[in-house]
Image (cartoon, rainbow over all chains, first blue to last red; front, side, top):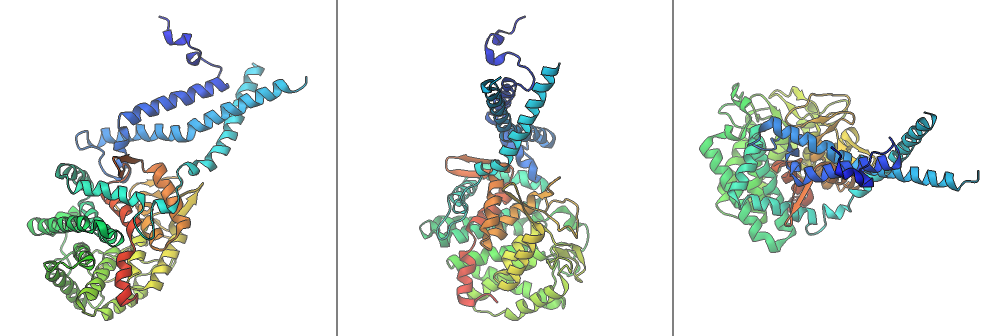
Length: 102
Length: 396
């Protein structure tokens, strides 16, 4: 079955490490972060200081949700800007190469 | 194939260049002026928001119960220390913000009364970790300086803000009992757990005694002087010059200097011996404090005395050797000694890695807990209580 989303350019598979590929990865991480943030996973990060995140969910599940949140959060604040900057650098580089006399 | 390799290499080079640009800039997005955390005079926005969260806890029993239960699963001490730090914070806040004094005093009384009731009803072990029952206290009958010192300082802080006659005999009784036990042990060392004595608890207890002298006109300056001389002589790590964090009743060190203890110890010493306090802070800052890429944090142990993670250090994050416990308490030290060069990057780390949650004017740090947030509130508000006592008695 064809994926209906693929008709939009933004969802089309891009060449590895091309500017669009980097931006797609940044977008995916941002959406994931938005989802875990809205789902309230931040509340479980108390396990970082040895406090149980939720008495109802217990230690293991609380710790798992905390790790999921922390990994995606770090990816969002550290990796996403790097991916976007790298995409910008590549685009500027390509533009300069095109502008350069043959 | 060649074009693909070229594209991948260009992509990797762009990623490395982007990382080199972004990583040194990251802290700018989390750094605020120091005045957002601590203000002179008045209350900073962070202090107000943190306080609003704690005041809500003490007006909503269901919420409070849930928070305290979560901490007690790990450590009953945190339940107790969360109360202490909040009362000490509220005392400072009442002196900073006289218009809100009635609310702060009411909350302080509520916390103190409930803590005293629980101690009386459940016994001293209620606020101690289970190993307190594993062996016999050397000095009988058993007393924990941890509880007596902090409760005394709660009672005294409340009375410094405004006299409450009902608390006077409670403070006098506890202070007299501590002083009597100090006099019974020629080494001037008292237990918090069986044959386990903590520098933190001694300093808090001596602060309480000093406040009690200020309030009721007694004079225990000789005891304080003798204890400080003993500590300098017997309880200092020769390599770092930092005070040990725990020791036995005969003064044998158990733990070396620890970040989770020394930052608060240095602040407590400000009331007892200002020069010694500053010396301890500066040594702790050198041995334990660190700033990387604009983010401040603290180690739990100096390089010369490595330890193993425990309930006080909190998890140690490898690579940078970051201790959650020590980094949290470093706020108290940096704030007490007006070390804004350290406080600002510490606050940046708090915004970056402690996951602040701000709702309806209330602030809590999700990666922290009630006692951690109360200690941060204390760091954001400390000062006026010590200043008021020093203004009459002066630091030794």
